[in-house]
Amino acid sequence: MGKLLHAALTRSLLDSTVLKTGEVALRRLAEESFDLVLLDIRLPGISGLDVCRWLKADLRLRHIPVIFISSYHDNRMRAQAFVLGAAEYLTKPFSMQHLHACVVRHLALATARQRGEPPLPPTAPA
Image (cartoon, rainbow, N blue to C red):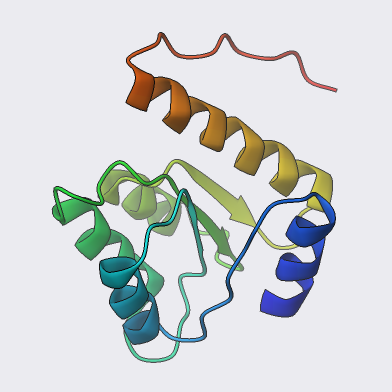
């Protein structure tokens, strides 16, 4: 799934990095600057939920939007992701157009927030 997402985002002219484990994600998040994080809940080692928990607990990184992509359709899992600070929760299967719209929207919201601008108005469904 990571290669497919990377290819789709790259085609949309969005720079992306694929990391295979929660531990690697935590290390890279501490070392490099990222504008947005796409996370699966099921990761080898540290779960995506734990990565999100760590990210949102770090004052330097908590502003980074987190979008979960998961095969879990369970409302409790979705609620837990939002309690931890997720910006979105997409369930598999999903359309690449929907993912792209979510990524672009949350990047724009994060940029507006950093500039102290009001949030973007909601957009009409396509």
